[in-house]
Length: 193
Length: 193
DNA sequence: GAATAGATGTACCACATGGTACATGAGCGC
DNA sequence: GCGCTCATGTACCATGTGGTACATCTATTC
View (cartoon, helix red, strand yellow):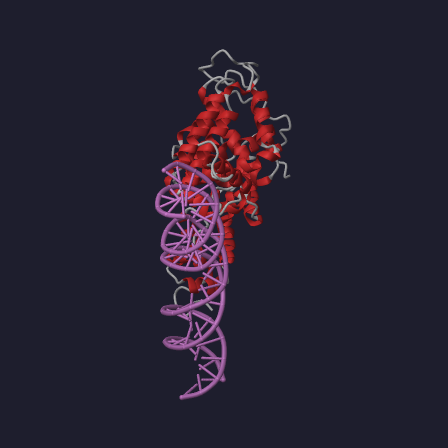
């Protein structure tokens, strides 16, 4: 039960290394051969443990969902933090060099989503929910949350392509600097500035 | 000179049908076999006329660039049109069912761009320039143009995945409804670069 | 009519893909 | 020891890919 005969055969651990490989390659369209090589196991065994490539993808996606859920808990920021600060921090975090792989992978899943994949759509919806839950704690009203979210995603897109985080950072900063009074008719008490 | 022996052999016309096929499939990663079938010619002849798949892609991308350049001329709107109206119209145009193929294709090229393809990056830069040129005529200042652009692209992303144009429309409308006074400190009129 | 040059079809190739068949172990309980 | 189950490697396969070899056909030019 506790320890398998050899070292590898724990599927969960294997899955984590698969996810790591997907992140390193920036896409979930990684061939089984390359995936196996990156994980340090034979393609033969990957199929043996997971049954099919689809199952590997499913597992990795779920694992990624868990990880992101943990990372973007609302508790990640102190209550009543200024929205500008929250977004600034999120942007810095997102555009950190070490995040590039995850970013690429998430965008790759978005691509699958807009190409029709039901699972990828669910992943996208989950991420959306996550960020809405996070931002709702710092922004007044659902509408503005969705707007910021769209701005953020557009900024990420531009960042990924150009490699330059500045335009995105500027836009986000501007968004919260521009006279943002009287923004939400449904403005609940949480409107600093 | 004028008319070839048979009907097909005009490479330019062929290229247009290739682009149409790419648009119909929503991706530029269309196999030569499928492409040929869609165009109504044999794979053999595609290679014959264009030399390689890469050349076909290059030609189609250039053709697409031309088309989009024509579509998003600044003259597309009367001067001094309200920004809100401009964006509203652009959004309606973008989310029209008939535009979905082009949208998907452009996003597919964006994907190539963020995966490193130099040509796709150039395509993205060109589109960016195009939209900046357009929007600069109606928005005060480069910074706000870039912000709107990012918001727009994020909205497109969400629309493509969910199929729902409403959130994007709302965000754009909100952006221009919220007190948008005193926006650009550097509101110079017409600054190329 | 003969030579030439392009158009076209058929068959094929090398390679990558996800996945399988089969054989060989290697450790376990008895 | 003897089976039993699982782990593992090697070779393989069917399919799809971009692209080519070669042979044929057709129209134009001389």
